Length: 497
Image (cartoon, rainbow, N blue to C red):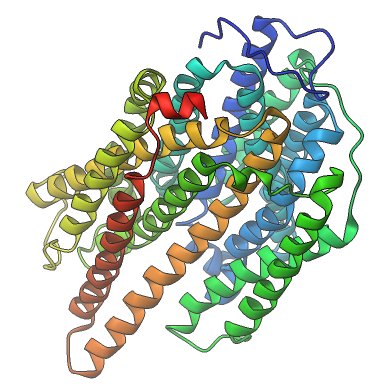
């Protein structure tokens, strides 16, 4: 990674004496490594739920809290990162985030039961929620505009390769070792990142006075936690009765969100808002984030349902499913630097629009998958496995062409003093979009499957019909993203704006 010059963007949050290029490179490189481990941790748990149900003697709904609590914690902590990144130095925030994550990983690896394991997951989520906005804010502040696409490409590698290898890695671990080894595998990597960070990370920002508005924190916690919990409950309610009706947390979350937005608008002129919403005044930010959210809905829904199709319809194992999906993630990661470099040269529009079209075609092709279960011994990459590999690779490349350029242009279009708030907004809405996409896809799948079974259809075929129905919805999202991509500004317009 080369950062050959620094942007001239004066702000009270930068150090009086600018950090050297080498220091910035070390900081960003270490943050990338830490973020990789944290994102890997998010996906490595997805296939462990059945094993945990048996080993800990818990129900599926209880075990699901290991994922739900992680998402809720992320939703509560991320809106506060704008304040944290203004109030505290880069070094302090990095060490705190890595300490929380490392401590949570250690606690989870030693957990004697479900309660301690859940507490470990909450600590992990608290550190993860801070690291991604910290990385984005550091890149936006210290990497010049004409180099940001390349660095964002590196971030895309982290965000794509880690989820790609997560299920494969966890499948391999669970096939031979106890579930604790998922955490024991990550613990030395997290601890090393923490130790190296303590030794090498230097402050690249100077803390500024930032008021702490407690009512805003409470409102944001209720708003985003309520929305994400309610959206997840919609998916659960489609298959069984939930303890809390989904409309209740969604209604509470929507009301709290309305009050939260009103309060932030009232406080932002005094620079005391917890989450400054002024980035939405920039058209490039609003359009870019809107497309990213639509893309995230489709992506998260596909990530949930495609493995379900491969395992429950085709009969592949967890490890085999991971191997089928692995090439797509690796290709996405390999293409990210090239896409980032192209974004620096030509801007977001020439990449985002074709990327949206590619994602649309891929999701449309997923509705045509053969529904016949696999027979006998599974051979790696037979004809139809190759078809899934090709379709999923097309989808991931299309998403990469959207995510890297749009994230670069959207976050880079706001004023310097709003970088931390813009990255917090993006990460918060990404969590909501992921929950919404997952809830919608699961709901469509479950309701369609239930209707098919009640009409006398075989369960496996009914499940396949339900999943294909959800992929049709994903195709609709991709078409919407394609339409929105036409409003992305060209390079020269963006530079002038």
